[in-house]
Image (cartoon, rainbow, N blue to C red; front, side, top):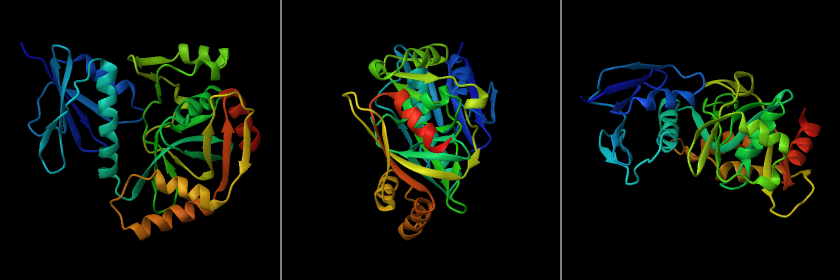
Length: 287
């Protein structure tokens, strides 16, 4: 007998079908913070995503906004892989639902009275650094993508748990950090690990705050004492422009918003190799 489930995401007016995959319901909800998600036993003909249990994992079908469907060429093998597939699609849902928000490829953590933004590309260490900051009691707004309200220039959380790439950089992590991660392992695969942060450490969907600083990261593999130094607003602005991936607005408007956001923030560059050193430098500067 075929098992049908449907998840309804009220904040985005989106629906997701699960076919013979009931285990995904709780798993997908487990990585979301502050999302309104309802589950029923119906099947939607117009679902935005459908996961179907397959011999080796799950078939994933995505309905694009022009009502066409596309089947992902890579089949998610594990529950964590399926969550990662949903995770990426959730970014598109957010951009569609909140058209007056930009989406910035950046980590964002509240340190002291304001949010510190880390706009960096892949492998710069922003996710593991944001979790390291959370392990010291700071509230994480994003480890990978944060929204920027174009009207008031506030950072807005998408309410998704941080996801770390495996293997973890063991030489850069202290024993205390390792224990923190070990007790909060959530969904996991060979390549990805979600960290289940407590409510006081993880911002919910829509939670927002003023940006106090923009910090460009440079992580080195060889041991280097952490060094946080001021940089010109132009260098920080170049980083944040590069990491904006919401292009639905007029280029001039985007440029104006990012310029004002940058020039109203303190701007720094952090060169580091070990997480604890980086956390100490950021704490000293902003806490």
